[in-house]
Image 1 (cartoon, rainbow, N blue to C red):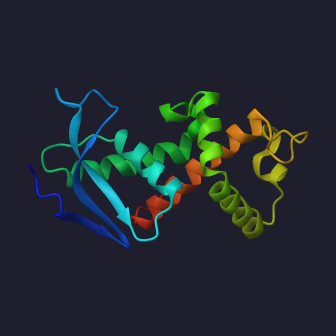
Image 2: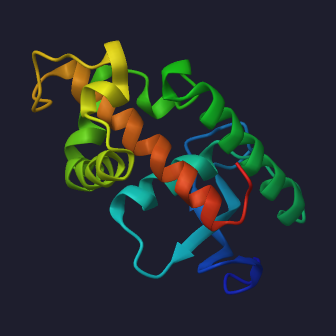
Length: 169
């Protein structure tokens, strides 16, 4: 069993540690337990933790872990930035039942990210999302806008994590 306290990469305030977890991805070996790199950050939030868990579940790595995982996460983040959740690349956020549950769980954090984005850009919510935003649902009480905000919250959080890891996205 590996040393679970061995720090293998450092970047900013984020530490990557070897840990053993249960994975939903059955493509790894015969066992559903795999060694992964877990991002640990002081002051992390539930939204960041869920994004990190999903990010790692979509990653692959070899025996040494470090180089392949780092490259894989960077490629994954670039794909997410270019294609977004709408592409279906985040299997955990494809169906409305999943995106609505994600939004409901993280709505306070997502709304804070949205508020900061709107303040920084000077754009209204309708201007930010264009014709994808349902103007008849300004409070995001219905499915379409909650789905859009779930994707927005996931994408922004993943992007910010990538920047914190030192990736030039």
